[in-house]
Amino acid sequence: MKLHSETYDSYKNAEGEWSVTIPSEWQEKRVKDLFRLVTDAAPANNDYELLSLYTGIGVKPRKDLEARGNKASSTDGYWIVRKNDIVVNKLLAWMGAVGLSEYEGVTSPAYDVLRQVKPEVDPRYFAYLFRTETAKKIFRKNSRGIMDMRLRLYFDKLGALTVPYPSSTEQKNIADYIDNKVTLIDKKINTLSKKVILYKKLRATNIDEIAFSGLVKDTPLKPSDDDAIGKIPSHWKVLRLKEVANIQNSNVDKKSHDHEKTVKLCNYVDVYKNDFINSSLEFMQATANDSEIAKFQILKGDVLITKDSETCEDIAVPALAAETLEGVLCGYHLAQIRCNNKIILGEYLFRLFQSQRFGKRFTVFAKGITRVGLGQSAIADALTPIPPLEEQLEIINKIRCSTELTDKAIGNLSRQIEKLKELRIAVVNDAITGKIRLKNTTKRGSAA
Image 1 (spheres, rainbow, N blue to C red):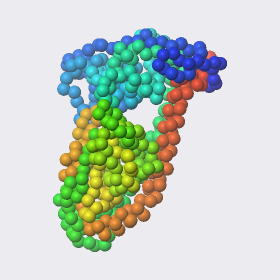
Image 2 (image 1 turned 60 degrees about the vertical axis):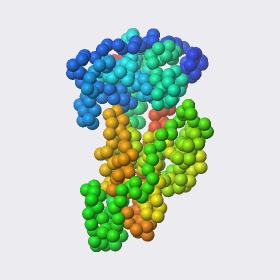
Image 3 (image 1 turned 180 degrees about the vertical axis):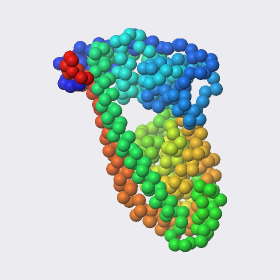
Image 4 (image 1 turned 45 degrees about the horizontal axis):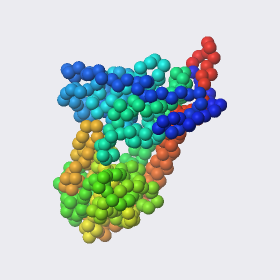
């Protein structure tokens, strides 16, 4: 099947909360007239192949979950899910946690399962629609709860929403178009992401060679008492991180009922995407009280690391505060480490976290099921090799020179990935709201 695009003859403003412009010929219908809430209870013997795990596309096979140590002790309250059901994470729907199941099995009570009520409803179209930025805003408004982390979208609210409703042919054409385009974009993103991983491994290897062997050839070595670190120069100290730095896990989120003042928040994404945190970044606006402002203000030399993530591999990813950031606080899902500069320099510790031998060992301490977290004690008790300050400065300078080319390559690749992600969003939004008109141009009798 081949599709070509043009625009529709006229457009109108969608009614209700879905405040977008759509083609005049499209209808609008309530979600509950298109989907029913599945209340088919899972069998008690727990012999279905699947358990729930939000991944952006719904659920994963049990074998994939058990490979990560994720198991359910009981299926009490679980729902049966079928292929092409829409799976909605009630707690995170407002963040886009909506997916289309590729399998048959069961899903946990944390999820609502929506099943089409008519064959002319294409669930793929609505799965894409429910993950748009417009949908996220509407879902957040209709979620019930006090704080962002406790908001829940229930089907009584979701079902009452009026959504754009193209013809069944158009739904299929739009879903096919997005599937094809997104697949191509995701392949490019995946290729570039693998290159980033390779460059980061190369950088970590370079840092290992510099940061743990000392600067003088044939320097006598001694055991560090940590198998992951191995031997280090005999004149270095080995101390627990809590002995040379202040470590605190941030609890500052975007919004809370007792917050008083407007601040900016350095969050997980800022740290994950940037080696260095500075005023050129666009930080999220938030609110905080005086105690939080005093406690989590970011100062030059602070090392921020990811302490919560979806995978162990993304735990303890570091960033260095390159300057003091007035009014910018360390946000939720991050740990903030402030070094005693008389013993250890912030940039030296930052480079240690970038290394394989020091940084990657934290992944084994992360615990969780659908998300993993790193406890403060695991960070605080980490044995840390500490050269004299003068040697730390020399190591820092040598690492800067050694990683300059790989840092540039990682930066260029990361920017390409971000542009592709922006393109992905644009492709979905333009097709899902009818900014382009997609027609099947395959002639009868020709190959699809």
